[in-house]
Length: 210
Image (cartoon, rainbow, N blue to C red; front, side):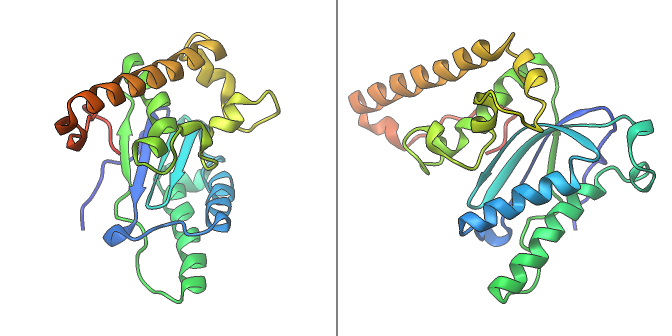
């Protein structure tokens, strides 16, 4: 079994995990909705949640862990336990419904500290365009299982929406960052149409996990 570095209170993280043996985590809308509800139940008491994206066989979450003094007593010595509780609660329900046994998520779950402002700026866009990058939808705004809808809305949300937009100097700065992705996608499509051999290549951002 691999061991991961413990989560550090006060740090901003990109958390992620895939299905074990490439198995799909989510098969129906109910699965996504349950995972979303369990996130708020288990993770929100210990972290500020900025953004998320749930895809059929993996998920992404951007969250800042509370400072040690603000963590519940039970988690001060093990701040990653709430994430394990979140995943395990989903697995128990899923295993019953699918008549399966054993692990559903790869272990340990991935955790990348956000290094600096540039990393944070790219990550907030990356998480939301991920469904399009994987070919799940033709345009990332169509994917219903990410935080983009809540961030774009003016309705109340439990997400740290104002703090998230501050990474981009405001709501419209984030929209500009998303439009740059749209422009880049269009430019890549034109390039690949002109030089077909490029279509089989994958562009990856160094240091980011898909």
